[in-house]
Amino acid sequence: MKISSATFIKSATGPENYPPPELAEIAFAGRSNVGKSSLINVLVNRKSLVRTSSTPGRTQLLNFFNINDSFSLVDLPGYGFAKVPLAVKKAWGPMIRTYLESRESLKGVVFIFDIRRIPREEDIQLLDWLEEFEVPTIPVITKIDKLKRGQRDKQIAAIAETTGLPRDAFSLFSAQTREGKEDIWERIEDALEA
Image 1 (cartoon, rainbow, N blue to C red):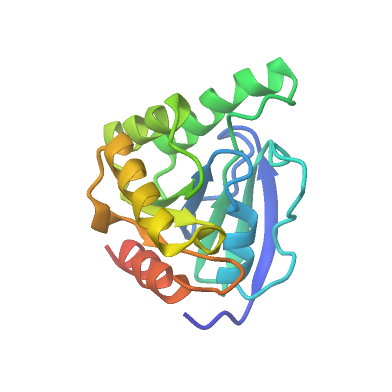
Image 2 (image 1 turned 90 degrees about the horizontal axis):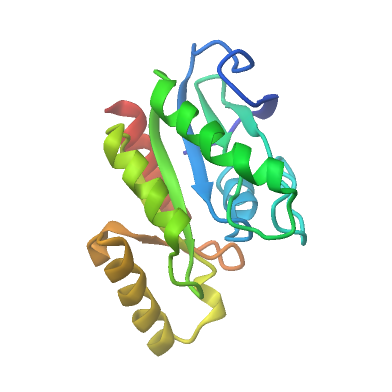
């Protein structure tokens, strides 16, 4: 995928704030601190289209981005981080669920897992919603450069087992080495064309 333009459209909390559903959308979801912003920035060849932060839980709204005037990427709020006000935490579930359930232009979700963490209850909940609303899912394991190859295989197997997804369902990605970038783009293009 050649990226000629990538621009921020708007942030939203609910359907009344979403941009008009003129472009097909690919959303990005995952726990706080899984490397979601870094993945999006690498995919679109921008250093800071999506703000990365050392403080997990920064994305608290749905952020819409126009890519090449041909489709949108949607950065969903990260979840599962403790240092966020309870009211914000409580709003996340309904905010994400409403978007997944009601957005007709949604073509797929890139669901991100950190290779160093075993998926938890919120991850399984989100997988259940994706299945319930029949949203095509592209599972991606990030930060693969953080582990040696032997450890890597063990962690991938554990993530696959916990999620109930087959091992080969996952794309592997490193923001450092950019490994996996082409594979993820191919899967996004397939979802957009489906």
